[in-house]
Amino acid sequence: MRSASNGEGRVNDPSGSKRRRGFSLIESMLATLVLTGGVLAVASTSSGVTMMIGQGGRLGAAAVLAEGRLESLRATPCAALTGGSTLEGPFAVSWTVTGGGLAREVRLTVTYGNGRAPRSDLYVAIISCGI
Image 1: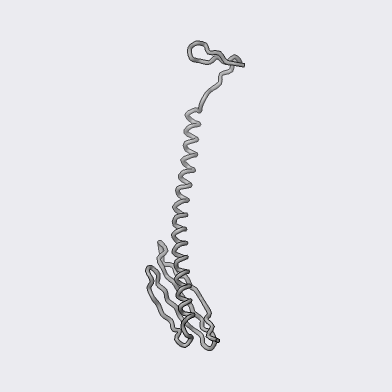
Image 2: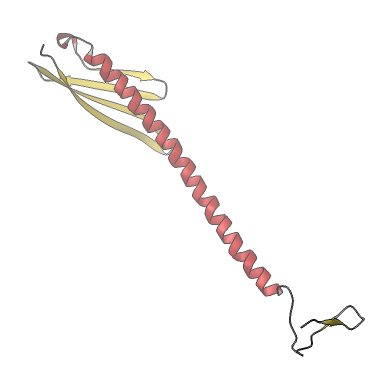
């Protein structure tokens, strides 16, 4: 059934019921409040994710650095393997060599800044001295 205009710009509803159009002020304020809460939740989560990405990058760089140092120690003759330490950029690397005979144990520590406090990662490798 069609509605007819009464000539004053209003629409006559033939069923006689009054229909409201649009949203009330309360509904609009509630929707804005819910949307604001969601935006704030996403914003607080993104800062945590950014921090974790930075930590992951430093952890990965420390692992690559440790792997390189262990490879250079594996290339060294067993009789010449000794402990030591070095600074490589923001990383402090130290290692100890223990054992004798056909194998040496290398304990390598990489220390670096991790935002609030220094972090140390320990890597252990066994180097074979046999032919």
